Length: 221
Ligand code: C5P
Image (cartoon, rainbow, N blue to C red; front, side):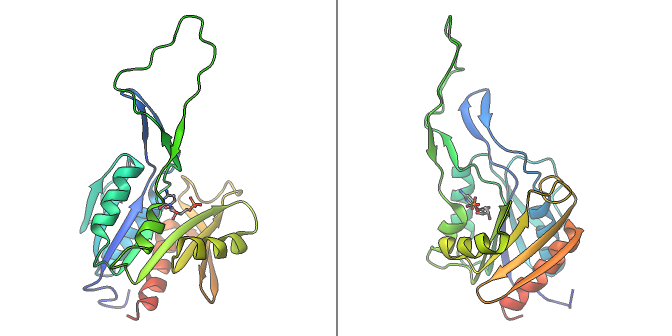
């Protein structure tokens, strides 16, 4: 990176899955590895930024000079993001947040009833974290969402840009099994308000460095 690319800048990143409790021993979650978010945290710290990484349950080491906040549920991630984003310059949402959570988190383990052959779990919607940050007072100058699509990648990314009120959407095609979720490499399309730029396939750390440079440019550094 150019020396001091993000020196004095504050960056907040969400990463990994969330876990939504059903009862004390069960939860709903997804297969997000958190690798892209951790790669971005490392790259932003290497560019000189002060980085806060809000991480769901993942099995990854914290990059050097990164402040990590561990959370479990989407609601905890939402609260941490809204607490940490005021005054930040850049907010990057890479987390695979559960869209819904069980309406009730049972205090005791749910028992099978004699003869029970099915069960219904009622879910309620979780808050949209990146849209909440993008619409907040003292919004970071640059807010970024990720989009996993299986078709019409640019079109859907552009819709997500305006729906969530963000400045950039990093889109990838998850119908491909060789890139994205869990993998070490990625091929992305960076979609902004007035232009888009493809990058990759490349290692996630290389993708992270490309993105950090693009976001730094958009912050005017
Ligand atoms: O709407 P969709 O889930 O496809 O959008 C994905 C983007 O929105 C990702 O950047 C993800 O981190 C973010 N998101 C969020 N809070 C949610 C759902 C998604 O911040 N509840």
